[in-house]
Every structure is written in structure tokens, then in C-alpha cells.
Length: 112
Length: 115
Image (cartoon, rainbow over all chains, first blue to last red):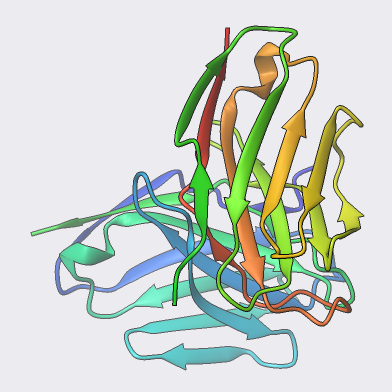
């Protein structure tokens, strides 16, 4: 049972435009969500997170939106830059449980 | 401040063998988690260690075991290797109270191939 789903294996976006990466989850007990970015041959690095008590969290060019009723979150990157090309993972956890449940990732390609 | 390091970077083993992977946590971090990432999938939680004690386990058989040392470095041991154990193994360290997860910092991983 895949509790966290990223249905787009890849996404191609023009440099300077907005990148929107989507993530769906099935477990309503999840109350904390994280986005990680991974370059080849490196471990994932934390990007941004959101608690279930919020519906938006912003950090520079990165904004995460959470729609609890739809069990959906999205990561917006504006403007997209070539260095943003990477695999992006969505992860979720219950605050009382340290386990992160991960999606399969979306490969973002920023075209010059 | 040193980051999370893992060794070796790559490893080839044959079915039935045993393997030990190593992880050095980020300075000051007392919690380490291990993940298995199969090709095309997200990382899957194996287990976590907090102050040298196993603090939780994912859906992995007992032939996956671990250790955390007083300096908070860690080992992942896998016995009786199977072909499906071929994956990238990631460790992540965090400064954690033990009552809940915090932001984890990942190492670059060890790529294990089982033939």
C-alpha cells in the first residue's frame, strides 16, 4: 500500500517559469510533510516542510501548499533555475512517529 | 561541521553473503536512521537508532540488523543477501529527543549490488 504517491515520474519546465510538483497521500494521520531534493550521487537534502495545521509555507523561491481535505500537497518553485534540476521527493510522517514515508520521486528538468 | 558520511560508496556481493555498511553521523547528532532505496522508488525506512538503542523498525526481516556506537556512528548489517537487496542504502542523522523525528541529514549512500 503506497501511502505517499508522486504520480509524475518526470517534469520538464522552462527556465524562469514556475515548476509545480505534486504529491498525494492516503493516511489521514500524517501531520507533517517534507520535501527533499536529490542530486545524482548525493543523499537527499531537506528543502521545505509544512505542518498539517498550516496550508502554506514559503521559503524564498519555494512554497509548499497543503490541502488536507484532498490529501494533496504541492511544491511550487518560482522562478525555476537550472540548478533546480534534480529528483524531488515528498515525505510524510505522524508527529508521534519518526518514520518518514516517501513518495517515488519526480525528476525535474529545467530547460534553458 | 562535518556532514554525514557513508562507506563504502559501492559494493558487490553474491547471494548468501553478509555485508556491513557504515555511517558517520553529523557532529552532535544522536539519532541515525537507515533507508533502502530501490531503483525508481523512494527510500524505505529500515530502522532508527537513538543513543545506541533501536528506536523503531520498518517492514524489514531480522536479517537486517544495526548498531550505533557511543560516538553515534552506525552500522547496517545484512545477512544471507538476496538479489532483491540490491539498492542504494542511505543513512540519515538527526538531533532528536527520541520522541519524534526532526529534520534528517542524509549521507550520499552506499550502492549495493547482489549477484
